[in-house]
Image 1 (tube, helix red, strand yellow):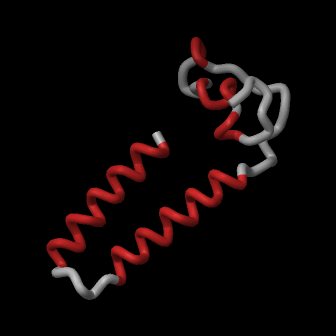
Image 2: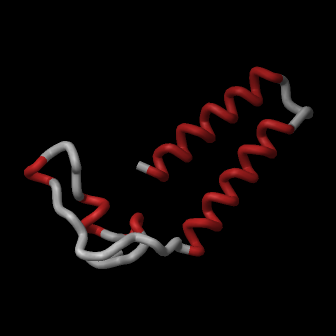
Length: 80
């Protein structure tokens, strides 16, 4: 995390700025063209876990939906 990271999720200016509120709106003096390898690995891992949950035929449908709901809630918390 830095003030001038070219990775959008790692740029504090970009991350803390709110385009809808002028009091909290600040433009970066750089572009966000790079991707973080670790963040991409996390995205891939979460996608794989979701597929495993969706494709698991050893669980009842109710249990599968419960696990998917909990998984999606936790994933959303990670990305907030």
